[in-house]
Image (cartoon, rainbow over all chains, first blue to last red; front, side, top):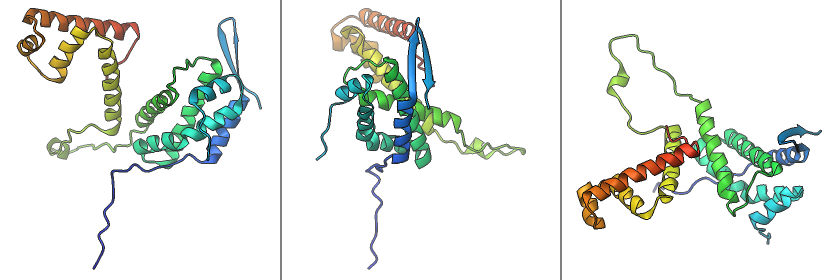
Length: 47
Length: 193
Protein backbone atom coordinates (compact mmCIF):
# COMPACT_ATOMS: atom_id res chain seq x y z
CA UNK A 1 0.00 0.00 0.00
CA UNK A 2 1.19 3.43 -0.85
CA UNK A 3 2.59 5.46 2.00
CA UNK A 4 1.20 8.88 2.59
CA UNK A 5 3.82 11.35 3.58
CA UNK A 6 2.61 14.36 5.43
CA UNK A 7 4.67 17.51 5.36
CA UNK A 8 5.14 18.74 8.91
CA UNK A 9 4.79 22.51 8.87
CA UNK A 10 5.06 22.94 12.60
CA UNK A 11 8.84 23.02 12.61
CA UNK A 12 10.76 25.90 11.09
CA UNK A 13 13.61 25.09 8.76
CA UNK A 14 16.99 25.44 10.40
CA UNK A 15 19.54 27.18 8.25
CA UNK A 16 23.03 28.50 8.84
CA UNK A 17 24.92 31.28 7.14
CA UNK A 18 27.95 29.95 5.23
CA UNK A 19 31.48 30.24 6.67
CA UNK A 20 32.52 32.50 3.77
CA UNK A 21 30.06 35.16 4.93
CA UNK A 22 31.28 34.85 8.49
CA UNK A 23 34.86 35.17 7.29
CA UNK A 24 33.83 38.37 5.51
CA UNK A 25 32.28 39.75 8.70
CA UNK A 26 35.38 38.95 10.74
CA UNK A 27 37.62 40.60 8.13
CA UNK A 28 35.27 43.59 8.03
CA UNK A 29 35.50 43.89 11.78
CA UNK A 30 39.30 43.74 11.73
CA UNK A 31 39.53 46.35 9.00
CA UNK A 32 37.02 48.78 10.53
CA UNK A 33 38.55 51.63 12.44
CA UNK A 34 36.38 54.15 14.24
CA UNK A 35 37.83 57.32 15.67
CA UNK A 36 36.02 60.02 17.55
CA UNK A 37 37.43 63.49 17.46
CA UNK A 38 35.76 66.53 19.01
CA UNK A 39 32.40 64.75 19.01
CA UNK A 40 32.65 63.71 15.35
CA UNK A 41 32.91 60.02 14.53
CA UNK A 42 35.11 58.94 11.63
CA UNK A 43 34.86 55.46 10.13
CA UNK A 44 37.59 54.02 7.95
CA UNK A 45 38.39 50.61 6.51
CA UNK A 46 42.04 49.69 6.60
CA UNK A 47 43.17 47.13 4.03
CA UNK B 1 31.56 19.71 24.39
CA UNK B 2 31.55 23.35 23.34
CA UNK B 3 31.81 25.86 26.15
CA UNK B 4 29.07 28.50 26.00
CA UNK B 5 30.33 31.86 27.16
CA UNK B 6 27.81 34.47 28.20
CA UNK B 7 26.97 37.08 25.56
CA UNK B 8 27.72 39.94 27.95
CA UNK B 9 31.29 38.68 28.45
CA UNK B 10 31.83 38.20 24.72
CA UNK B 11 30.46 41.67 23.95
CA UNK B 12 32.67 43.22 26.62
CA UNK B 13 35.75 41.39 25.29
CA UNK B 14 34.99 42.40 21.72
CA UNK B 15 34.53 46.04 22.69
CA UNK B 16 37.96 45.81 24.33
CA UNK B 17 39.43 44.67 21.01
CA UNK B 18 39.26 40.87 21.17
CA UNK B 19 38.25 39.86 17.62
CA UNK B 20 37.94 36.21 18.61
CA UNK B 21 34.97 37.17 20.82
CA UNK B 22 33.09 38.37 17.73
CA UNK B 23 33.68 35.05 15.99
CA UNK B 24 32.27 33.23 19.01
CA UNK B 25 29.26 35.54 19.12
CA UNK B 26 28.49 35.07 15.41
CA UNK B 27 28.90 31.31 15.53
CA UNK B 28 26.86 31.06 18.70
CA UNK B 29 23.86 32.82 17.15
CA UNK B 30 24.34 31.85 13.51
CA UNK B 31 21.70 29.14 13.29
CA UNK B 32 19.09 30.91 15.37
CA UNK B 33 19.39 34.24 13.58
CA UNK B 34 19.69 32.71 10.09
CA UNK B 35 16.65 30.50 10.68
CA UNK B 36 14.68 33.48 11.98
CA UNK B 37 15.50 35.51 8.86
CA UNK B 38 14.89 32.55 6.56
CA UNK B 39 11.47 31.91 8.13
CA UNK B 40 10.46 35.39 6.96
CA UNK B 41 12.16 35.85 3.59
CA UNK B 42 12.22 32.21 2.37
CA UNK B 43 15.31 32.80 0.28
CA UNK B 44 18.79 31.56 1.14
CA UNK B 45 20.73 34.36 -0.56
CA UNK B 46 18.53 37.09 0.91
CA UNK B 47 18.86 35.42 4.31
CA UNK B 48 22.65 35.57 4.14
CA UNK B 49 22.57 39.18 2.90
CA UNK B 50 20.37 40.24 5.81
CA UNK B 51 22.47 38.21 8.27
CA UNK B 52 25.59 39.97 6.98
CA UNK B 53 24.00 43.44 7.12
CA UNK B 54 22.74 42.75 10.63
CA UNK B 55 26.19 41.90 11.94
CA UNK B 56 27.78 44.80 10.07
CA UNK B 57 25.46 47.09 12.02
CA UNK B 58 26.28 45.21 15.23
CA UNK B 59 30.02 45.55 14.58
CA UNK B 60 29.77 49.30 13.87
CA UNK B 61 27.64 49.93 16.95
CA UNK B 62 29.95 47.93 19.22
CA UNK B 63 33.10 49.54 17.80
CA UNK B 64 31.62 52.99 18.34
CA UNK B 65 30.97 52.01 21.93
CA UNK B 66 27.32 52.92 21.43
CA UNK B 67 25.96 49.60 22.74
CA UNK B 68 24.73 49.50 26.29
CA UNK B 69 24.95 45.96 27.61
CA UNK B 70 21.83 45.06 29.54
CA UNK B 71 21.96 41.31 29.00
CA UNK B 72 19.79 41.55 25.91
CA UNK B 73 22.31 41.09 23.13
CA UNK B 74 20.36 38.49 21.16
CA UNK B 75 17.06 40.36 21.31
CA UNK B 76 18.87 43.50 20.16
CA UNK B 77 20.41 41.63 17.21
CA UNK B 78 17.05 40.06 16.34
CA UNK B 79 15.49 43.51 16.39
CA UNK B 80 18.08 44.81 13.91
CA UNK B 81 17.45 41.77 11.68
CA UNK B 82 13.70 42.32 11.95
CA UNK B 83 14.06 45.93 10.76
CA UNK B 84 16.31 44.84 7.89
CA UNK B 85 13.73 42.21 6.86
CA UNK B 86 11.13 44.99 6.66
CA UNK B 87 13.55 47.05 4.53
CA UNK B 88 14.07 44.00 2.32
CA UNK B 89 10.35 43.66 1.64
CA UNK B 90 10.01 47.38 1.03
CA UNK B 91 12.78 47.21 -1.56
CA UNK B 92 11.44 44.13 -3.27
CA UNK B 93 7.85 44.78 -4.01
CA UNK B 94 7.63 42.03 -6.53
CA UNK B 95 3.87 41.83 -6.72
CA UNK B 96 2.94 42.12 -10.43
CA UNK B 97 0.70 45.07 -11.14
CA UNK B 98 -2.51 44.40 -13.00
CA UNK B 99 -3.51 47.05 -15.51
CA UNK B 100 -7.13 46.84 -16.45
CA UNK B 101 -8.08 48.15 -19.86
CA UNK B 102 -11.66 46.88 -20.03
CA UNK B 103 -14.82 47.38 -18.08
CA UNK B 104 -14.35 44.29 -15.97
CA UNK B 105 -11.72 44.23 -13.27
CA UNK B 106 -11.16 40.82 -11.70
CA UNK B 107 -9.61 42.45 -8.61
CA UNK B 108 -12.88 44.22 -7.99
CA UNK B 109 -14.43 40.81 -7.39
CA UNK B 110 -11.56 38.95 -5.74
CA UNK B 111 -10.29 40.50 -2.58
CA UNK B 112 -7.82 39.34 0.04
CA UNK B 113 -8.32 40.78 3.50
CA UNK B 114 -5.11 39.25 4.84
CA UNK B 115 -2.11 41.50 5.26
CA UNK B 116 0.89 40.75 3.10
CA UNK B 117 4.13 39.65 4.76
CA UNK B 118 5.59 43.16 4.89
CA UNK B 119 2.46 44.71 6.41
CA UNK B 120 2.19 41.83 8.88
CA UNK B 121 5.79 42.35 10.01
CA UNK B 122 5.22 46.08 10.46
CA UNK B 123 1.96 45.40 12.30
CA UNK B 124 3.72 42.94 14.63
CA UNK B 125 6.38 45.54 15.35
CA UNK B 126 3.80 48.25 16.03
CA UNK B 127 1.84 45.92 18.32
CA UNK B 128 5.03 45.08 20.18
CA UNK B 129 6.03 48.77 20.55
CA UNK B 130 2.54 49.72 21.67
CA UNK B 131 2.53 46.90 24.21
CA UNK B 132 5.74 48.27 25.72
CA UNK B 133 4.29 51.80 25.85
CA UNK B 134 1.16 50.56 27.62
CA UNK B 135 3.33 48.73 30.17
CA UNK B 136 4.86 52.10 31.13
CA UNK B 137 1.47 53.61 32.07
CA UNK B 138 0.32 53.98 35.69
CA UNK B 139 -1.59 50.86 36.81
CA UNK B 140 -5.08 52.46 36.95
CA UNK B 141 -4.77 53.97 33.47
CA UNK B 142 -3.29 50.77 32.05
CA UNK B 143 -6.18 48.71 33.42
CA UNK B 144 -8.83 50.94 31.81
CA UNK B 145 -7.02 51.07 28.48
CA UNK B 146 -6.56 47.28 28.30
CA UNK B 147 -10.21 46.66 29.15
CA UNK B 148 -11.43 49.20 26.59
CA UNK B 149 -9.11 48.43 23.66
CA UNK B 150 -8.15 44.78 24.08
CA UNK B 151 -11.25 43.41 25.82
CA UNK B 152 -13.68 45.73 24.02
CA UNK B 153 -15.56 46.51 27.24
CA UNK B 154 -17.89 49.49 27.56
CA UNK B 155 -17.03 52.26 30.03
CA UNK B 156 -20.02 51.17 32.11
CA UNK B 157 -18.56 47.65 32.38
CA UNK B 158 -15.08 49.04 33.11
CA UNK B 159 -16.52 51.25 35.86
CA UNK B 160 -18.30 48.27 37.43
CA UNK B 161 -15.21 46.07 37.20
CA UNK B 162 -12.80 48.59 38.64
CA UNK B 163 -15.18 49.99 41.26
CA UNK B 164 -15.03 53.59 40.05
CA UNK B 165 -17.53 55.93 38.40
CA UNK B 166 -17.92 56.09 34.63
CA UNK B 167 -16.45 59.60 34.65
CA UNK B 168 -13.35 58.38 36.46
CA UNK B 169 -12.94 55.53 33.97
CA UNK B 170 -13.31 58.02 31.10
CA UNK B 171 -10.77 60.31 32.71
CA UNK B 172 -8.27 57.50 33.17
CA UNK B 173 -8.66 56.49 29.53
CA UNK B 174 -8.10 60.09 28.47
CA UNK B 175 -4.93 60.42 30.56
CA UNK B 176 -3.70 57.05 29.33
CA UNK B 177 -3.94 58.25 25.71
CA UNK B 178 -2.37 61.61 26.55
CA UNK B 179 0.53 59.88 28.30
CA UNK B 180 1.11 57.44 25.42
CA UNK B 181 1.10 60.33 22.94
CA UNK B 182 3.61 62.23 25.09
CA UNK B 183 6.02 59.26 25.11
CA UNK B 184 5.58 58.74 21.35
CA UNK B 185 6.39 62.41 20.66
CA UNK B 186 9.27 62.52 23.13
CA UNK B 187 11.02 59.50 21.62
CA UNK B 188 9.97 60.09 17.98
CA UNK B 189 8.36 56.66 17.81
CA UNK B 190 6.69 55.90 14.47
CA UNK B 191 3.55 53.83 14.86
CA UNK B 192 2.14 53.83 11.35
CA UNK B 193 1.84 51.07 8.78
